Length: 228
Image (cartoon, helix red, strand yellow):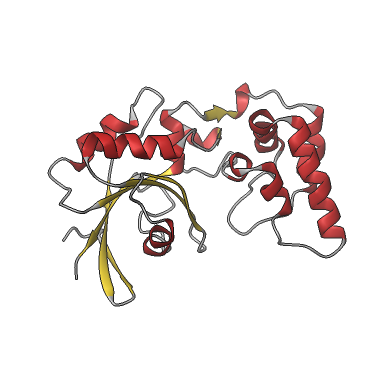
């Protein structure tokens, strides 16, 4: 067993999570080739491949340097009304708010902000009305300074495009089930895309303690293996 492997017990069954280290990924990398190279000699029958969402997004060219962003008046206005969250800045910065507007469109973000504001006014704090209406891509945006890995510490990282299709492509090419996960260190764990044989509820349980880490571990790929 590798020293950085971790075991979790789910309903009496143990699963081994094996984080796999890579180089720092760039838009020049193809995630399928990266995965195929990393799992060679490591993967076993019935393993599941998990990929972190931000590194996938980086390979799609979705890490945007702050210096390249043009912040509009709407982003400069709306970010001030975003609530603080425990897991990071989120859209409480003009740069990340601008990316949300670019991704989702100004009308949708403005509508979500109005409804979210009304919700807070009537006591619906913490209900997630803004992100539910703005959509998944708004929720997946990582603000600048979120990543500790250069050169991405000064980038806003948008959510990956078509995570379900990317996961299915990896399964089709490798023969192993694959999913894309959005996980943080305070208990947030969501599967945002998976191949056709993946169980979303299981993946969110087996990865809930973030075995890949949240810092500069450079382990965007993880193998999940049933051991008992």
